[in-house]
Image (tube, rainbow, N blue to C red; front, side):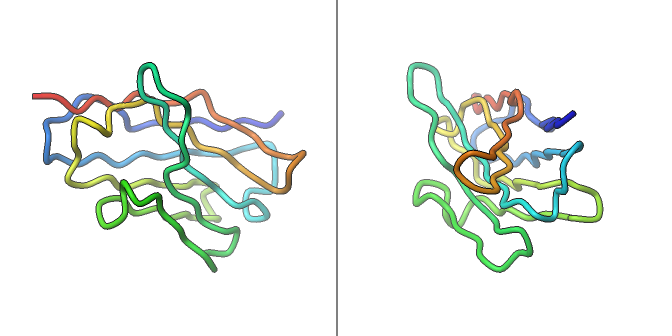
Length: 117
C-alpha cells in the first residue's frame, strides 16, 4: 500500500523557520520525482518545489526561491522542505507528491503551516 506522510508543520512567527518531512512507503521512492505543493485558505493548490529522482534537477516557485530548500534522502525514503524567513503568505497546508509520470502520482494528506505573530 502506497503511503506518503508529511510532518513538521506548526505555528511559527514571521521570519522563523520550519523543516517539513515527507516519508514514502509502498513504492520505489528512488524512482520518483518528489514535489511539494501548498494550498492556502480560499486558494488553489500551487506547486512550491520539486526534485528529480536522483537529485539531478531542483526547481522552486519564484515566491519561495532563496528561502526554501528541497532535499531528499533516498535511503530513508524521505523528502524534506527547509523553510526559512517565513512570511504570513506562506501559511498553507503543505502536501508532498511523488511523481513518476502522468498516470502514476501519489499524494500525502498534508501538514499545516501557520505563520503568525
